[in-house]
Amino acid sequence: MTLEGKKTYITAVVLALGSFAMAMGWLSQEQYQVIVGLLASLGLAALRSGVAKSATDKANTGEAD
Image 1 (spheres, rainbow, N blue to C red):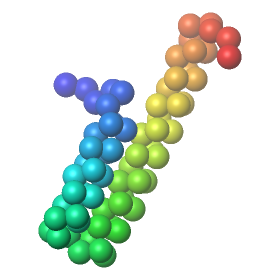
Image 2: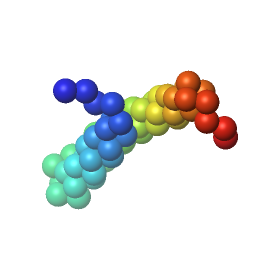
Image 3: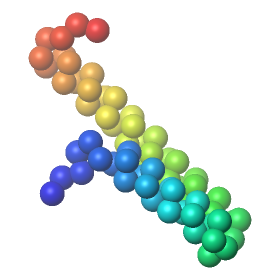
């Protein structure tokens, strides 16, 4: 199984679960901030990877911007 095209969505779901856990009182504010920081950086990395891959795919197929 490949995660191609799903990393950003998985990151968003895990962040939503973290928000739910904090709302339920299962996480402290400090724990939540660490989780949000890590997941935000992972989400941005996945998004950056997707944008770069999209540009490469367009160049390979000869599509114009």
